[in-house]
Image (cartoon, rainbow, N blue to C red):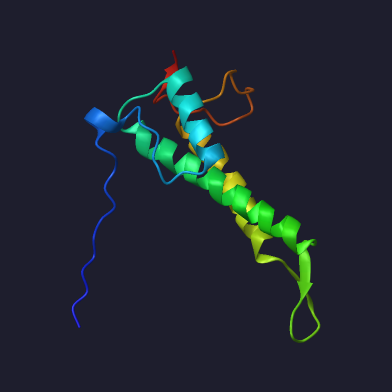
Amino acid sequence: MSSKITALKPPNVANDWQKVPTHLKADGKKLWTHVSGTFELEGHDCVLLQSLCETLDRKNQAEKDLREHGSLTFENRHGELKSHPAVQIVRDCNILMARLRRELSLSEEEPPDNRPPRLRYGGKK
């Protein structure tokens, strides 16, 4: 059996930088539009921005699942109380979003002195 691995290709930076990716949900599209319209980003930043928007959509879906479930926990087949899997997804998404936001330098204000320095790849227009 032959297996073919294909790499994910970033958007065509020359033409597609300002276009909102079609697979994003409403909040992801709104974030893309806001960030690309507010901040001066370089072409390679679109990959990070796309990850940020996808992560927001994933986080929103996990939060919706938690609301539908009605609880942060569930009982497994042995009667043990376990954390709902969406709790970890939300937590991981929050961490990833904070890191991507820092990488893109999307903060409007300077971080306090006791914080690690943010990386300067983009900047406010």
